Length: 161
Image (cartoon, rainbow, N blue to C red; front, side, top):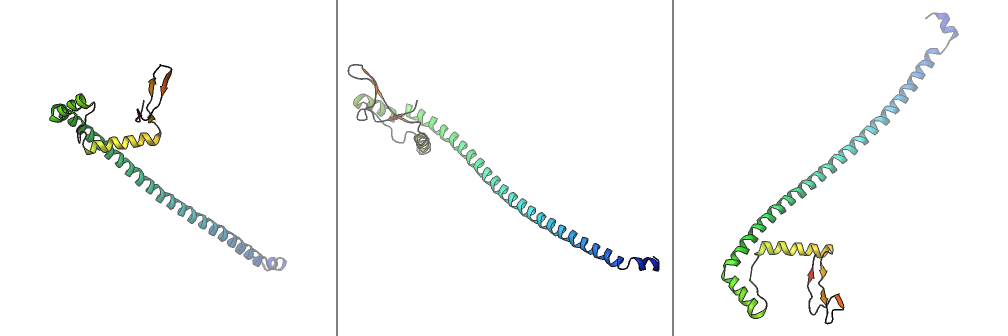
């Protein structure tokens, strides 16, 4: 540039340099804000990934528990089949028949076996909790006018229809 140019625009370089510095400061501020947002987004992604990992672990555990339960149910069902056949052929079957004839009731100790008895108990508890079991009813009455009624001293059991 010529000396004449510097005469008419004194401080021009200083003004341009100051503007560049101000622009650099603004750009640095924007860059700092972007870096901060990026760090926050990364932290949120890491938290979400950790939460997802926990949920996947819980889902896998529940899937394994369900699989184990289904296997146990199959095993218990097979044991029940064996128990039913055994009772039909065993001495207990004769004692059961004798009790039914003599007393009107009979029983066979350990008929279902512990696993099946536990399974049946658990299923009954679930039905009771869900409200699907109802007090049993009698029908008819002495003169036939009471079509349905409950009388716990006669019949205190619960049923599911």
